[in-house]
Structure formats: C-alpha cells, structure tokens
Length: 144
Image (cartoon, rainbow, N blue to C red; front, top):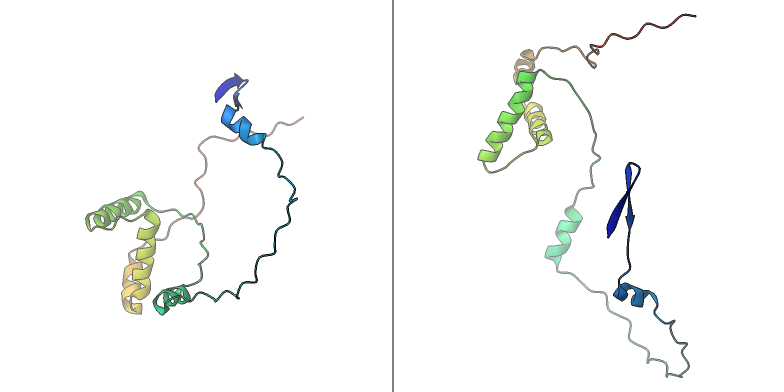
C-alpha cells in the first residue's frame, strides 16, 4: 500500500495482488443438473444438556449496570492522594485505576455508621462549583 499526500490529507491507494484478483474472478456456481436422491430423514436432534455446574453461573449473572460519566473539581493535594492510593494498591498486588479508587472510597463511606460518616465529611470543605473563569479579557462589543 502506498500513500500520496494530497493537500493536508493523505490519500491511500491500494494494489490488488494476483491472489486477490483470482479470488475476485471466481466462476459462478454451476447449476445442479444431476439428480440426487433425497437424503434419508434424520431423527430429531436431541437437545444438548449442559452439566448443572455450568448452568448455575449463567443464571447467577447480574444484568449489566449502566455507567455514568461525570466530572468534578477537587483541590490539588486531595487529587494527589489518588496517585498515592493507586501506588499503594499496586504494591498490594491489585493495581487500580483512578475511578476504581474513587469507587472504593464511596463504598467505604457507604459502609460507615452515621456518626463515622459525619466525622469523615466534617473535614471536607465546600468548594466553589463550576469552571474557573478564563484569564483572557473578553473584547468589548463594537458599537456602530
């Protein structure tokens, strides 16, 4: 395959190999001219049964949960803790992704008693929500 540059895009050109060309020019299937005896009737196929040990896990499968994408803002020192926790999980033999660390934290909070939960969230300051304003001054509207 060769590429040629046309403007800012690359256009691909392909050459057919002799093997592909021969496969593309297959002769059409011959019509059935010979008379064959019909195949003898077969007995109805028996349904295959699987051992009970394999059928049980399939029945126990949970329906696929819907995933939700979200974004949030957090202070940089708290964000760096996520990397520290990822490193700890890797050393423990179970490397985690950032989302897995956050989900584990949510599970830990959910498992707490109301008193322990209140203590844990007491140290979390409220943040200003939304995106930061851009530092570029906006151009004033021209009047005519």
